[in-house]
Image (cartoon, rainbow, N blue to C red):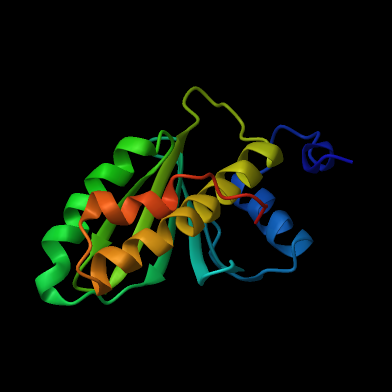
Amino acid sequence: MALSEHYLNDDIHPIDIVEHIAAHNDWDFDRIADDQIAMAVQGQWRTYSITLAWSHYDETLRMICTFEFEPPEDRLPTLFEGLNAVNDQCWAGAFSFWADQQLMVYKYGLVLAGGQIASADQIDTLISAAVMASERYYPAFQLMSWTDRTAQDALQVAIAEAYGRA
């Protein structure tokens, strides 16, 4: 049975759907508020902190997927060059580095204007895409930060798509 088959009522809150997906996948999660949930998803390289928040104001389901990342100060120019190159390859979502928090962040906003409803399959794909992108580019970010490789050279390890599912 598809995850979307659990939701036949159009009045379901998107964060309720996320909570069901997290429970279904046995992920640790915390319902922070009615409109926000945080969870931990184990990947091959890291455990990713994923937060989804629903904004009634602009009808957007916002997701951030973060992991700790502490590159040396002298490697930040290479990392930022690499982030630009990575974001050119990412069609759904984008990476940024939050230096003050020492976090690598993958962000995406699913706009549901006009009273649209996100399906469980859409939300599951959103979460999976964040984890897959993080898994795919994590080794490249490491090489950019901890070796003398150029950003373009480090990105060669991320050429192949990551396989699997969050």
